[in-house]
Length: 435
Image (cartoon, rainbow, N blue to C red; front, side, top):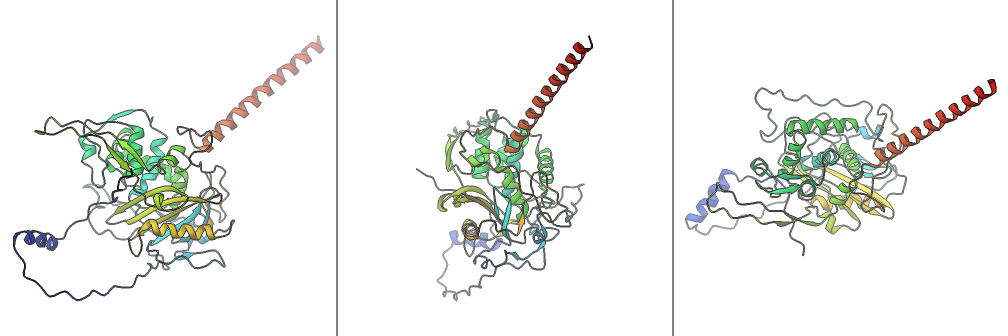
């Protein structure tokens, strides 16, 4: 039996007026009032980015979540690479479509988006691809990539009160609970648990050290619009990414078989935690089922999964992928709203659009694993993303390119030994002839 998926998102705040009204409504009877006039619905308009409003930094925050800690400086905007990473057209800020392609889908509220090919790295279509926005919990894709390569899955971690007290979405890590890293990764990727992110980051040296590792990886992938400020995606000073960068980060994560498996997992059982002896009459907290919060997975044929996100400043964010007729496409959305349709539905329409384009169509490219971003043309990517459930695949295996490097080193070593043996035999023959 599937359980309802919780909405993944920071808690919305009641205004003072609403709170007061709610309180008074429960205390006194209110006389009948005349029905209010029918509100006029403002026609929906896709945000216009033609003038590059977010070329250097995300929109201004609406609260104090990005205020630096006392004594800490305000991060300067990230530099803008010239020429743009991915090709000339990736420097455009409006809708970027192939020549002769039909118009982009309607009802897309995302301010920036990219449709790309997971295997070839081709960007099929985009809108403000390098515009800078906040990632919210989609940055957990980057955290997962760092942590999956550094931590052992069978290590058992004890939950702490600090884990349980983190802000935002929590899966239910409790003090004294025993969790394997695999279970923490499930909670992180499937249910976007900020408590799981905290427990994972603690093993990587703490939040600050983890953010440093995340930013180092992003830079190595030429995701130059990206700067993590928190491991979980909660807004923080200097937080930034782009729809193009998020495509790069997601594609890199998909080279890890376990990541590809987890984003496609619908439900798992998650451990509970013991009663707190400091709290009178506190009961034991039993385990519970955790469902994947990505509705694309349940409602789109061929869906491979993805990651959702939301904060007050970032608005709705999303990354996901699907396969059809031997093609695997990914879509990223930044600064979207739930109107006129929900983010996963917007992603579905963009995926349909991408699958309808002829093979070989592109307006840019994601960088390969050793890109030269100073050229307009990005080279094809050598190491393809690993599909979930690949024959012989090992969920603990390293990315394909790392296996390729190991094979290359082995070949070189064997060749070198053969050459040395050949030279020794030849020298021996020469010595015999001289005798």
